[in-house]
Amino acid sequence: MKLELRGITKRFGSLTANDHIDLVVQAGEIHGLLGENGAGKSTLMNVLYGLYQADEGEILLNDTVQHFAGPGDAMKAGIGMVHQHFMLIPVFTVAENVMLGHESTLPGGRLDLATARAKVREISARFGFDVDPDALVEDLPVGVQQRVEIIKALSRDARVLVFDEPTAVLTPQETDELMAVMRKLRDTGTSIVFITHKLREVREVADKITVIRLGKVVGQASPTASNTELASLMVGRAVDLTIDKSPAHPGAIALEVDHLSVIDHHNQLVVNDVSFDVHAGEVLAIAGVQGNGQTELTEALLGLQPKVTGTVSLDGTQLRGRSVRRILDAGVGFIPEDRTEDGLVAQFTIAENLMLDRSTQPPFVKGGRLQLEFLDDFAKEKIEEFDIRAQGIGSLVGTLSGGNQQKVVLARELSRELRLLVAAQPTRGLDVGSIEFVHTQIVAARDAGVPVIVVSTELDEVVALADRIAVMYRGAIVGIVPGDTPRDVLGLMMAGETSVEAGAHA
Image (cartoon, rainbow, N blue to C red; front, side):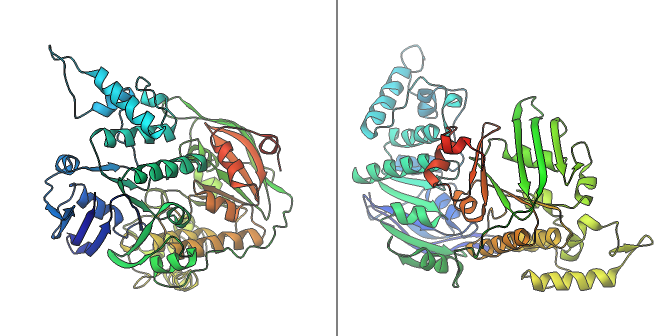
């Protein structure tokens, strides 16, 4: 089925999220929709799926104008969406999830589960999915859950499938399997819109690529375009995608973590007997699919988890059991994975946010009085040094873009005398230009002799920054390997497998 969007415009108050966007997806084509977070990709697809109503423009299927009052109308017209966050009921079986919202019944009002099971088996056989219709969704690996989402859409005769950032929660192997599925779907005539910000993936699977920036189509490209060309379209300027990183020269062991375990507020063991060390002047990257204990591990290091056993020693000083304030005062810099919740106060100015860690200490406070002149000079210096785009030091942090908010966090944390830097998902939600800057700052901290822990679900980021890589799976470290370990080995480790190479500490 041919899909065409003509002049789609969607506004939210004074913000124009989509500005007269044109897009044509031919039948049997994988069309990559590439752009950074906030570019307007998901808004456009929500208009297509009937979740939003466009202020201007029209949607055509096989040259016929459509009017969708909601997702039900879009599904009836043959449009399906595979969401980044799965729309599945964990305690239901695959068959029950597939029929949810489209239930058929037998005489007497009983659900016709046999038909749903047969539909799951038929679609699984057609595309080689190998999905058991009677399996509980909560017992399935993430990659198989995503296949259930695809089966749901295909069971409703979807001929246009939208994949919204589908690889965000997948291992590299699961990503490769998904791309194989997308090619099979394309070869059967299904039209696919693949929304992503990952250059390598869109080049690998798309037949055509449309790039969106700030709500507008800024160009189209073929998969043969280079990463540099695509990144330049996304950002609007030339971007250096390679990190200028010399070999590490590690010093003595600075951080020692021994037999660390964390029990969460549900009384679940989320970090299981983890041990590792970090040398001065090296980056230890912690890799893994989101949800395998990385968040709780970083929170334990910072004193944010209450139920922790084991030891955390920095330069011979025990940190576990200390308050967050005392851990920060010990020289630990922290870039949290959610900057808006844990890294910044949106209603405070840039200057105020830059002194949060030291708001009771000289040189910002003397004799109980805030040194406003010093704070102003300090903030102006950091705005220039970290290229924070704002009207001035008095701008509220909540009014800044995600990239500039992250630069405020970086400026604050890297402006202290650090004995350890913990950076959790440091580039989440940033454009490639901001990513380039953040990576440069992290490497500079390493080269200054600071031990650095980077926690990231982006394998490209892990490989680019790491001197050593610790891979977490279900709360445990399955291995610590050199930074140049092949991606396929890392992918297997992220799925819980170990090898001779993975099992050896680098």
